Length: 619
Image (tube, rainbow, N blue to C red):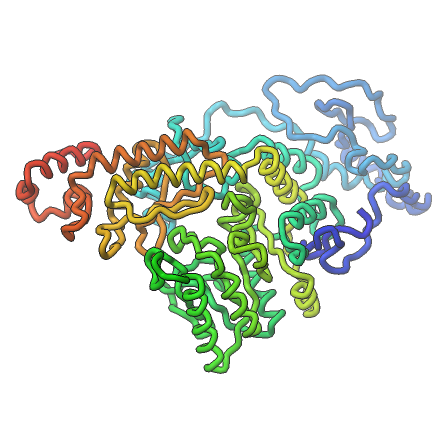
C-alpha cells in the first residue's frame, strides 16, 4: 500500500502510516526489468569451460517433479506436466513456476538470464534436489528418566519434577502425553483460543508459503493488524510497535517512558513480575528479592489485595486507600530529589495471586503518577484479549474514563506464536523518534506473526470467545463458591471471566496460606488428568487461566474432581486447631517415627492410610 506500512523498526500507526520515514520501495511488478547492454551481457556469459556447471541448471516445470540437465545451447523443453516423483524419494517444497520468484513479472531477456546462470546452480538445488531415502530407523526418543536426569544436571525447571509429564500434542483445551493420555489444561493462557486452532495454524502456513520476513519494506499484514488492534483500544492509543515477547514489550515500554519523561525511577506493585530481561528483573519484586535486591530507582507499592492486604473487603473505600499508598510512595521519591518515569502494573496481577484490583484504584493512581510527571503502563500480557469477559482489555474494568499511557501485549496475542506489541500515544512515540535512534527489531511485525495475530482476532470474533469467557467464568465462580461453603480450606474465590483464583488457607481467623495443601491438591488433580498450578506470595492460590474454549462441562468436571479430593481428605483438615490440613499425609518424612501415626485418633489413622493409598504410597 502506497504510503502505509512499517518503517525499519516494526512500528506502525494504526491506519496512519509508517512508524518512521523509510526508503520508498518500488511496488513489485510495476515495470519490466531493464535490459542489460549486449556488451555487458556478453561479458557476463559463462565460458566454454563452465559447460558442466551450466548443465546443472534445473528446468522449471508445471506441477513439480524431478529436473533433467540439458546442454547449454538447448532450448527449453515443452511445458507438459512432469512425471510424479519416484516412490521412496522425498522432495522439498518447490515453487510452481520460476516467475513466482519475480512476482508475476515477465521473464527477463535472454542476456540478463544468461548473466544470472552462474548464481542459479548454487541457489536452486536447495529447493529442487531430492532428499535421500529414509533409513527406516526412527530417531532415538529420550525417555522420561533421561529428561529428568538432564534437568537435574542443568538449570531447567520441570513442572511436577518427581513425575513430569511429557506433552506431545495439544488441541483446544486439551493436552496429550506420549501415551495418548488426555489432560484438561486449566492454566495455559498462551494458547488463548485453543491449542493448535486450525484457523491460526492455517494462517501461519499460508503466509509462510508467501513471505515470512520483511523488516524493511511495505506489507499489508502489519498495517491491517495495527488497524484491527486500534479498533479495540481507546482512540489515543494509536501507535503500535510489534515485537516477539512480552518481555521485549515491557522493556520497550520502559524505554518509551524514560525517553518521554526524561526521568528514571519506576513504581511497581509488590510481588509483581514483568519479564525475564535484566531491565525487567530489576522492576519485578517477585524476582529481584531472590537476587541482588531492590535498586534505588525502584519503588514498591502495596498490592491492592482486598483479601490479604491492609485494606480488606470490610474497608469503606479500599481503592482510595490503596491509591493513597502509591501517593505516599511518590511523595517519598520526590523528597529524595528523584523523579518518576513510570508506574508499572498488570491490569490484573497474576503472579501476585490472581488479584482483582478494586474499581477506581487505577484512575486514582494515574492522577498521582501524572502529577509527578510519570506515565502509567498497563501490562496486559497475561490478561488481555477478552479473558476478562466483560471487557476486551482488563484495564477497562476500572471504568471507561481510564486510559493508560502505554499498554503491553504478549502471550495470548499469538496463541503460542512469538508475537508481542506495545500500544501508545502519538506524543510518546514522537518523543521516542526524536532521539534519532530508530527502533529496529529483526522479527517484530513480520508477515507471519501479523497473519497469526489477525487470525487470533478473527477467531475471538467469530467464536464469540469474550462472551464465552464471561459465561463460563461466572459459572466456574459459582461452582467454586459452593465448594467454599463446603470446605473450610477454601478462604476466598476471586476472579473475572476466565481469570480465577482460589485462595487456600489453614484457618479463617489468620488466613495463613495453605502452601503445602495447595501443592498437594495440584498433584492430586494431575493424577486426575487436570493441569492446574499455584501462585501468590504464599504459593497457595490455585490459578485458573485456561484456553478461552474451556467449556461448561470442563468447569463441572474440574470442580467435581476438586470436591472429591477435598472430601476424601476432609478428616485431616484441622481448620481451627492450628494444625494444617493434610499434615500427616503429605510425606512420610514428616513423621518422627513409623509408629508416630498411631498416636492419632482411629478415624484420622484410617483417613491417613486412605490418603496414602490414593497417593500411591506403599506401606
